[in-house]
Image (cartoon, rainbow, N blue to C red):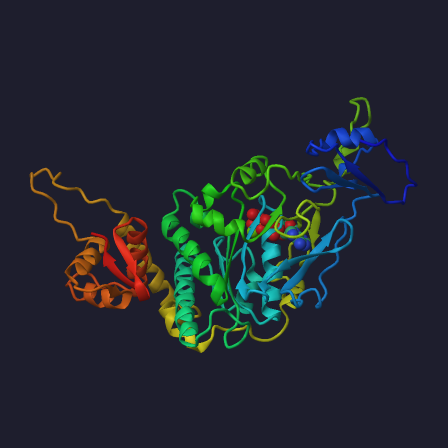
Length: 485
Ligand SMILES: Nc1ncnc2c1ncn2[C@@H]1O[C@H](COP(=O)(O)OP(=O)(O)OP(=O)(O)O)[C@@H](O)[C@H]1O
Ligand SMILES: [Mg+2]
């Protein structure tokens, strides 16, 4: 590496570094600071191209210490479908894609970060941008509505429990399938923005609570997200997960989910110690690219002798680093960026007026009428707390019932305990009795005619998906199903 460069206190210094051909560039931040005699590592930004070259920029002070709020212009999609999320360390705009007009693709996105890193503020900003761009936002918050309370009246669907999020994801999959059928009938092979349908964005904040091991809805949640990734992209239904998961095993752990998120827009905010290793292991981050760690605060560490008077009592922690991160799928994955200042830093007693202003006046965009039937009763009940509670209760009971493993023959009397047939068994019996492959709707009618407990189309679809994944049911042409044997 070249020798340290001396610069005036207010100058920015940029070093272009290159290792000999055949070697891969890597660096040790502490060694670099020591070589340059810099005590505050947040004044340095290092970007590598993952092979031989790096740019090291040394600033008089951290260039991202103060962030302004976004301007209305930043919030509007440009002709490439991108909005400005904040700035890179060199002052250039940091953009993220909400839509790809070249291919008509809705986006899949993942926002990772440790607790307090700023995920929910990123969510609020993106939701506000979606509202301004007339995108239909379906937002689920598994912290019970605490993460982004200002969003409630500014999105089309605001879900706050695991059950409601499952109902929302089921509806999203059903809408994607309905659009698929409708577009096929129109002779369309791609989604065209607002012609005739709006883009839909389905987002789950604290998604790890739904998808981690032990969650009652892990399997179904994973399957629905996977399904949405598969069908949604080309019919204008995007999906985003926001999570503090350190690795994908906590996000359902499925290969399809992994593949879907690898292709998506990935934002990494401040991470915990194990996160980076896991992101590399999960293939979300190439092993060769190195990211400068983001400290919790911007106060440089100073050594104090025990004989010094102790001034620490009065010192606070220094400015936080919330909102700092990396846009891993953007053109500069190793360049440190920071999101705009979203809302007040200090907690506000009620809803934050600065955040409400970001959403602006007026109603959010709504799901097109043509898909409302497919979205089903949960969509119709989303603003009716009593009706929604009843649907959530039914879902919970269905899940409890499915989770009970029947005791066969173990009763003290020696007689076997009769059990209600599980939905899987009822569904397989219907398919076995049919002469031809059946649609989900036909199966629903036949199952409901077998004298057992009434079920809904969502449970049938869910059960069919599970049986198809397990290889017990075959998907045939035109959305029909047949027994595998
Ligand atoms: N872009 C931002 N602008 C202003 N303040 C921010 C920003 N991002 C984060 N903050 C501050 O950091 C706090 C935590 O942010 P946020 O709730 O978004 O974190 P989180 O990653 O969602 O955390 P958790 O995992 O606990 O939900 C906020 O209450 C706010 O004070
Ligand atoms: Mg949060």
